[in-house]
Length: 235
Image 1 (cartoon, rainbow, N blue to C red):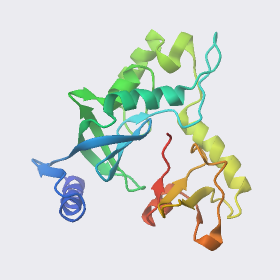
Image 2 (tube, one colour; image 1 turned 90 degrees about the vertical axis):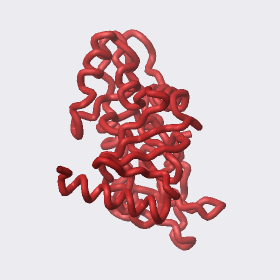
Image 3 (cartoon, rainbow, N blue to C red; image 1 turned 30 degrees about the vertical axis):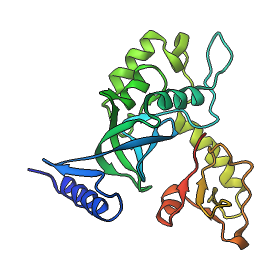
């Protein structure tokens, strides 16, 4: 028997299917799925059709994040993760099994392309952390990648986690924001599209906010998403 949470997710997905996504969702046997061509946003976020999807159980390096190595210069692990996800999924037919909706309005899901699971692949190859705060599913894959010295774990490296990187960027940006403690920049593009830039976004430093033109400062991503602003892409 489905739990209350499963039934609620199913009802939400079915409603979205009927009103927004033109049948891209399927709901059967208590399992909700989403399929379509994928567009990569960053190392752990995709757009499948018009839906934003957060890959379950992983935390990839943030845009601009470098990873330290004991015997070699720091490297752009952020670009490596994005490039690998692009190689696996960009423009390809992707099937996602939906698990929940996060506070930012994204669908949290496990996704695959031609039988290849995207999240586990990045963790196995040392290009993402297992996001153990939320799930233990991929911890064994991270441990194996560590033992093999793959990617971010080269030669016993212990790089800064994406969570710590975000926290550091957030603290510095929040201190400088004209809206105290609210450093997310809500920018309106030339085509009218509303895009929000978190402090770790690629173009954060060069984005200027004109509140007289309707641009905004937000206190968290959930606030920005709830008011119809989408996250900035990393590429």
